[in-house]
Length: 89
Image: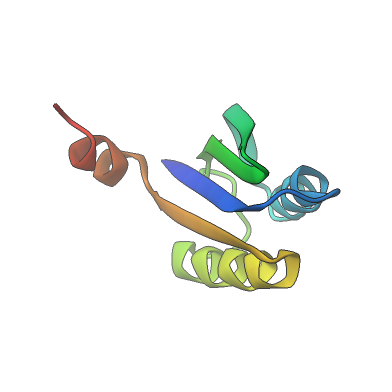
C-alpha cells in the first residue's frame, strides 16, 4: 500500500533528515520525493510504501502530525488512491 506525505512550513535545517529517519525506523520506504523552497516556505511531497510499516496507518498519521509540530511544519499523510481521486482533472 502506498501513501502520499506532504510537508509544508518555514524552511529550516533538518526537516528531511528527521522525517526520513522516522520513516526508516518504522519500516516505511520512500518511493519518490519532490521538494522545493517557495519564498522561504518548505514544500515537500513524497510517495511512501507502507507494506512493511511497523505501525498501523492511524498511528503513523498521528505520529507524523506530532513530528511536524515538533519541527514547526505541517505533515499530512493520505492513501495514494484518495490523493489521486482528489486531484483528478
